[in-house]
Length: 426
Image (tube, rainbow, N blue to C red; front, top):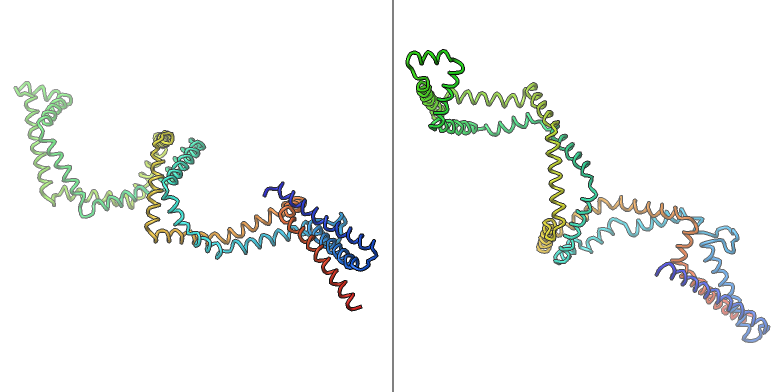
């Protein structure tokens, strides 16, 4: 029932109660005109008591909302005069009767939200609806996002995390793990094998020979000229020298590869160990690494990379949201359907979800109860007196008019009873 209908119903009941009072008055006047003879004495007693009851209850009902006839009689206009106390009592009543922790938890148990969610999501149309709502929400969120601010926030977050990250210690710990049980020697073996294979290639030997001759001609032109003077071919000599160099290098590489205790391997172990130790404990070395890290973080290329990542993501997401076969929509539907299936087939999962909701409710209930109670009290206290009286009277005033009706009828019945007792005791 809307406000207009409530006002009309209240008005009708007021007129009905007032009509009964007028009828009682007219009946009393008629009985008195007959000098209360015979049956009219009973009518007069009924009408007189009915008027008294009607007027008393009219006073009581009106005094609840306002001063009767505008006269400031003490203890009238009870509701506006005690608005603050009424507001506090109403808030406490709602808090204690409707928002008790045990009552809320009991409602959760009875409602069984996990099972209801499972049934709801199991409907394909509901999963589709959830997907559409998710796509719409993401699209609206994307339209409100300040790209420059997000880029700056993302960049600053990366900078803060990277700046707080101890790169030197992390690298030292990583290398310690990688070199445990001499695993780094496997890397050295692979490098030596690759180098030997590279030096075995004819084109590499030719390149080295040519380069040796070229360097010798640039650095030692007189020596090369003297070789020619004495009848030696510089190019042929370079090729022979390169071949000898390749053989010697290959032999050395094979020696290192085949001997696990080769001095070069031991030197490599020692160098790696010193480097790892410096990474972990050398303050000067750590400071240098930190300095290079901060210099890298300040480079504009990093900011450009972060900006580019965000632009690519928003461009892809915006295009995906526009497509009828949106990947995001399909993923939400798939996840919702899978979740519904898991909920439907796993009682333990349902109970776990319900239990978490109960625990969350227990944790939030005290604050929720107090917050709602304060909100109710503050809202009622902020109402002006006219608004408070109007709203309360519209909602309960029609029922209060029945008090006037009952007062008229009950008062008349009491009048008859009193008249009867008077006659029989006279």
